Length: 52
Image 1 (cartoon, rainbow, N blue to C red):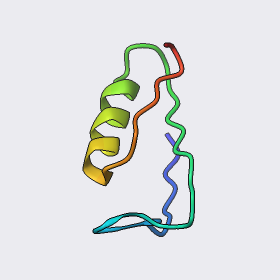
Image 2: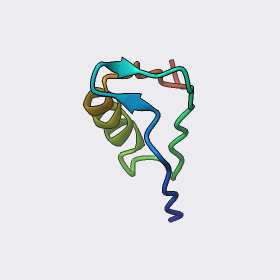
Image 3: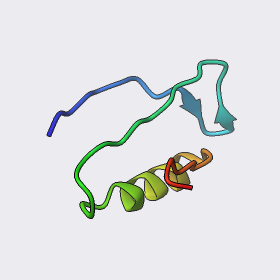
């Protein structure tokens, strides 16, 4: 598993002018969608799933 540290591109009032795409990868059934959903919720960002 690879860990990447970044500077948040959001503020308490919402997304800033800087845009990022968060891509979460891993084998089937490891919890990618769950982690991505919780991350999006915590950061007040949209959650788009590639399987849909």
